[in-house]
Length: 185
Image (cartoon, rainbow, N blue to C red; front, side, top):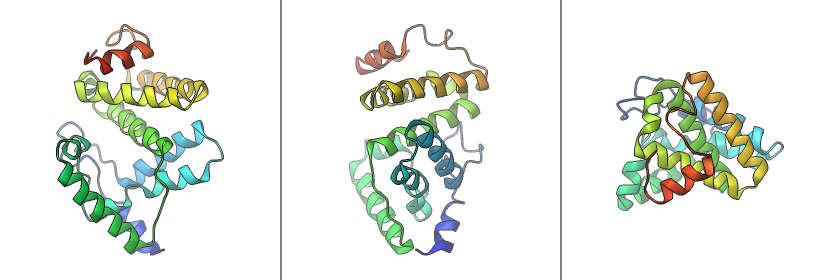
């Protein structure tokens, strides 16, 4: 592994094109470490997912942090970015195994960052859908993981000073179903 290049990659800023989060200062290193902490809380001892949390975005050292909505809206862009990021990881000698577990903590960490730096954004359709996806995928991992996610989200809401009751008047499983059906709150 090219340790120096991988180390430098951890300093790439996230959210640089997001007007609500671009001044929040998060780097790939912050994100990877926080995702690893979340993964450890849900799957203690899963070294593979811990490494994936740290490594998964290091390829963005050559592309920057392109927002997920842009990649979802433009499949060609998403493929080109994936190729560039994969090549950057290979040049660093870094590899990891993609998984549902990684996807869950990757999105959960982004959601928690948003809660602490731009909490009103949680009410937008994009973040509502992201939360529904996180909760649905966590449930697919089993009740203990779904419960762990709910505890983490509850703690984040308290820390961010937002109430569960104010923006969301239903249980989490009803929010998942509501977002699947196109509802936003």
